[in-house]
Length: 441
Image 1 (cartoon, helix red, strand yellow):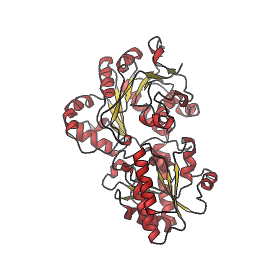
Image 2: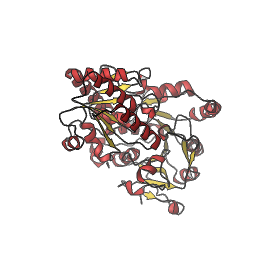
Image 3: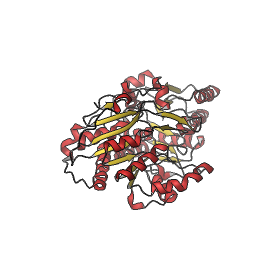
Image 4: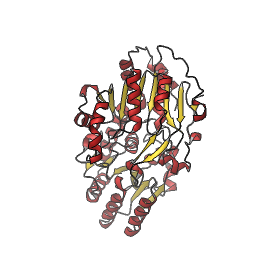
């Protein structure tokens, strides 16, 4: 029974675990499904590849994003798919609490799940793997208290988001956060930006921080997919396709790519360039605002896909010649769509100058770094890449190589497991190459 619902949690007796089998509790604000199984994949692979047992602290409610995409307030369990043996997804009674209304891309909410500590005490995991936010939520405090009472390691997985300026509210809670964070056993962060934040904000020791880039499925996302149907659907054939991936939110700067398209049109470059926007918008007001920008510019070489099913995203990436991220300085720095674009081997233009430590992109080597929210620089970069095939080829080859060598799920999970095994003292002998095929996708 891998998915345990609220009504049977109290009666379910956790199975006994072999002394040489790691039982890991995964904690995340929400186990989201609208982007596929990303939030489940780590647990699936730890089960399938290393015979771990996973206790995933889920909720009986949907995240704001899942709720709007799937049209339900309840957790969209029908979209979970198959879970491997030893994976227990606990759907606990929870409540969604908003502390700031507005663009949900920037957070402003947390879940209240009072049963977390009781379930951790009942399951007695060997280790807790927690996903904190830039400011700790109630869930983070509960897993911290449980780790202290149970005397087990607590590891953070940090997204490496760019830290906004501390507000008065954040300054008040900072002393409490420091006391919590300094007791963490280890921190895994996607980038050097996250490492710098934990050192400077909390005084956390550098030698307990591991910088491991965001994992991605480099088999599923790759540049060699057959994308002819996708190109025909959006009239992209025989065009130079400049793509934007992600929600059309103000903080991601989609409108700045529209302004860049207008600049290139004025330079007479609109004929064989198509600007492809892959993604919809969960916030209705921002969707309307983006459409207003598009209508005011009267651009004929723009294609809008709306929300694209996760299963169709690989061919969307493969259809593009260039990926543009106009502004990644305002949450998150290292996004999933950036990771997927890298695995697809796309030349990348990224507006992140001044915050380069947030992404594994080096200017002129595996991407072009520009100032954020700067249409002029976006237009210049697109023109350069369109006219310089050799540069496009170099950037694509280098970013693809990095993704496959450093970001592939198999490589990343190996590193996670080695850290977990060292922290728990469980010296389990695993023949990794024999178990790769058992990973559950």
